[in-house]
Image (cartoon, rainbow, N blue to C red; front, side, top):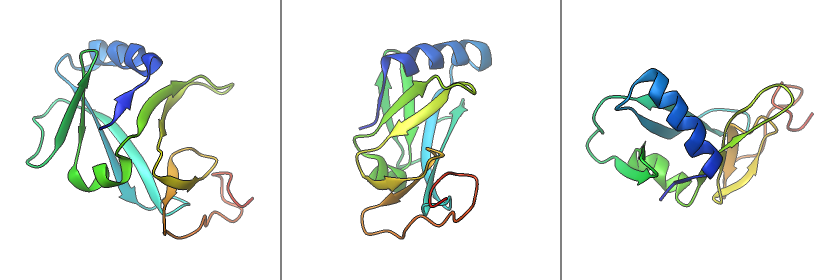
Length: 124
């Protein structure tokens, strides 16, 4: 299961109201990023694909594919305010480590952070 923080619910309700009233938040994990895996998320107004898991919380639907769910089970989507602006962040108990960018992580047994002097903040 993937959950939403109270702040994420408020922000998502505003976005969905503006963008597409029937949209769900689709979250996924993809290869790449400075730690080996990266998160993605987008509003999706299409029907879930076969095998997708759908979670609902406070009127917001979250959709995740089976492979991504193996990396994200128990994660929480949060919204954080930062000095340069706010954004959504995934708090993932399955991540062994993550880069300073907050959108890339290493799973248990995965490779190390490979940014070097890259802009994501790890290894710099």
